[in-house]
Length: 133
Image (cartoon, rainbow, N blue to C red; front, side):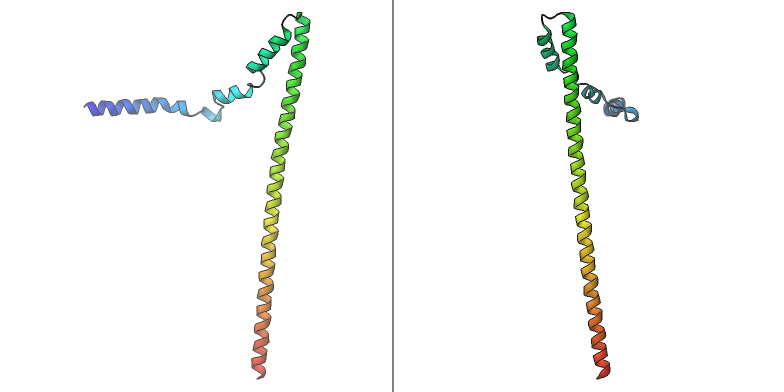
C-alpha cells in the first residue's frame, strides 16, 4: 500500500510539473522576453545615465538621456549590421564550397566518362584486330 501511495505521488508530481517545461504554442519563455529588452535598460546604462545627469536641470537631463539613447540605438544597429554581414559571409562561403564540390564532382564524372570511352575504343580496336586475323 505504501509503495502504491509513493508511485501515485510521483506520478502526480510528474503530471503537474509537465506544463512548466514546455511553452504553449511556441511562445517565448520568460528569459527570452527578458533578453529582448536587456540591452535597452541595462543596469550599467542606467547607472552611467544617473551619473551623467546628476545635478542637471530637467531639460538638460532629458536632452542627455535622449542623446545617450540615440547613441545606444546606433550602436545596436551597427552591431546587428555586423552580425548580418558575418552571417552573409558564412552563407557565401558555404555556397562557394558547395559549388567547388559540385565542380569537382563534375570533373570526376567527366574523367570517368573519358576513361570509359577510352576503354570502349580500346575494346573495339582489339575486336577489329581479332576479326581481321
